[in-house]
Image 1 (spheres, rainbow, N blue to C red):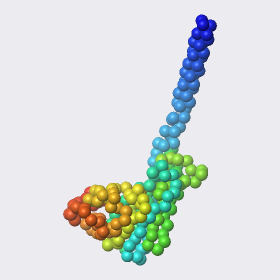
Image 2 (cartoon, helix red, strand yellow):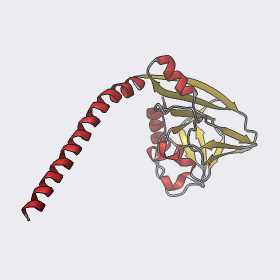
Image 3 (cartoon, one colour):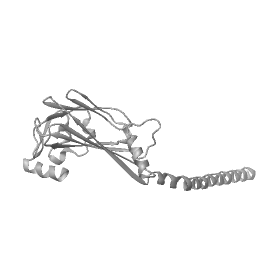
Image 4 (spheres, rainbow, N blue to C red):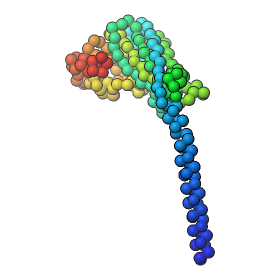
Length: 212
């Protein structure tokens, strides 16, 4: 019995020292790798691209295509109205890197597609990367300017891209998909919604607070 107890204590001590050694090695390894990781993320960079879309139809359709790394949630879209004839889409690509030049290079590595078929604009659900791309906090913020008076509808899970909730203007999340919308100088109007309360003055004040 004494021999077995002694062997057990020796074994436990050996395992304990082995785990302690592994922990020390891990700390040492982290002390070398952590500064390098921090250095790779120390500077941010971005570049902007603007695209225009001509929609001849009475109603614009906004749809979504599942693609990219869904769990990264790297795309946000703001909707605004404007006094113009075309749809204007401003895309702000951003990322981080060890230098400004490297950060911009990482931002330019973002792949994101928007396709047009007549009156339908289909947006990727998320950004995508080439196999060689390093993940460096890549992000895409888009602002779509829709002409005043242009009707539009959103399909499927398009509201997942929307950066600002429609609730700020008196609408619920359940109203976004399936209804017809339109911007005017007073803000956002739902042409087919029922049972919402938001006066033109309230919507105008909210619109100015969010976008101007």
